[in-house]
Image: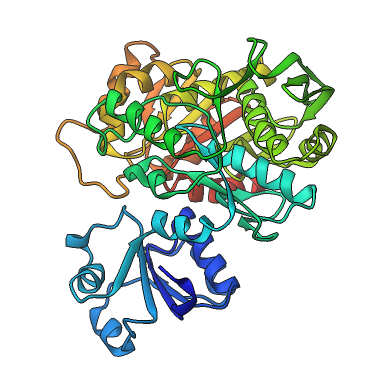
Length: 450
């Protein structure tokens, strides 16, 4: 597809984190951009302020009134939106419009760049944001399409040129197979999205398909059974962190790579998993010519990503942390990071399960990971793109956690504040990939008043 002949783009599901950066980019290059989403969010609020027209109701009559020119209009949709459930999408698909998925547009935009793709079940957003920040700090001509809001830039799109592109290679709906990666890394292949994949073997095989697309150099976390350069912590990897320690609130570590050594890098993010994310970003950046001193300097100024271990309150009496973790492995990493920082404190976690299928498929993992916390509040499942499944609900999760940890309860959103105040816990986590990220803003304001 030749984007030069496209004058207007209509995004169905424009408020998604991976849709909104594309909308911003297309507006940046001069296209007329508009879109639909189900509900207003902070992302859609920001897009409206930036001048993008957004509607929050499906209205085929409005679409017909626009007289969209089929030859110059592109329709982009997220696979979370189903044709049978969206009258507008159905109209475009059945009336000869140019209609593509989000991942296809990302592939088109980046195919004429040197594409650096970050894949993996966990760590994509932090790693790609680190990488985007490294390239921006080093003056590399690159634009980064991120799956979260980078704290350094307050956006999910880092503009900086078109020689290189940084993208998150999303495995949902096999989206990453539409990309044209020159360099890539794979951070993890723990099974997920089993509503899309047949089983864990199918999931792993699709990551191998992605790996086969990489043209120049692939990095994989040591232990992943895919051929490539490896990275890891004190495990003999090609890109290896050594002497990892915490000093004055930062991770310090030495780095050995095939092309050099750097002593005492500093990273102001919690958790050893972020040292691994840093190594992945470092390996890609060094491979395209960024020096280790440049990378070390960028690490020291990297502020992280919103909703990835984001402190909302940090005082002597209260710590409130907001995190996007929605898979048992991510919750384990979060627990380890919090416990490392606050070894003597009791921890209260509020967790909002995301998707019925994920809750069903990883129920045992959720029980094990959540039961580690001292007190657990489980919110109702955030259904997102799905319909309820019989026998899958938060009550079931609560009952199974209770067999391991008695201090667990089903919590409604309006009970969060009272639960915090009655718990006596100083460390409070609000965790999940649904609208708990919006709840935490309200809770922060309420706690600040107290």
